[in-house]
Amino acid sequence: MIKVGLTGNIGSGKSTVARIFKVLGVPVYHADEESKKFLNEPKIQQILVRKFGKEILSGSIINRKRLAEIVFAQSESLDFLNSVLHPLVKNDIDFWIKKHLHFPYIIQEAAILFESGFYKEFDKIITVTCPGELAVKRVMDRDDVTMEEVHKRMQNQWEQVKKVKLSDFIIDNSNNILVTPQVLKIHKELPENK
Image (tube, rainbow, N blue to C red; front, side):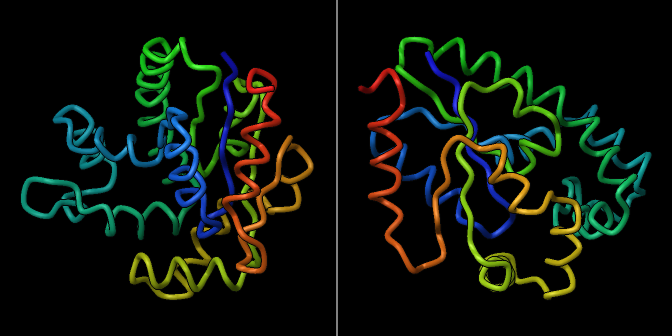
């Protein structure tokens, strides 16, 4: 089985690409989405409230938007959050991979695959790209946030060009070229699908 990492900066369209792979029958693990399920585990919630204060709560659950405002404003806060969540996600991924060993390849989608150093765990890397201004607009529309908030999030990610240099496959999601044919080409090129 080949382990494939799928990444790209915020707003690049990773989730769209992941959905196409899923339609092709490829198992996809969404690391960013899965990490959110750990936020409201009692032990994790206690750690986060101790660090960031009760202002991150909405009733008895973590207010993800408020938490994001805090952690994306200070890199040490983001590092702390990642240090809490990454080991849990890593264990979850390992368990998930064991359940999918019979597939020719699996995909893990993660925004900070390179930044976390986790990219070294994969046989192949796919990076989804798009122009920065298009990514900003997409995130503003999707998350109902300001341009300033999007730029704060982007500051915590590597430059797109750096990710491209370390990737095996690039998908252009700039709206100038269809994405599905690019995904199909990669699907055919991956060694166990030849």
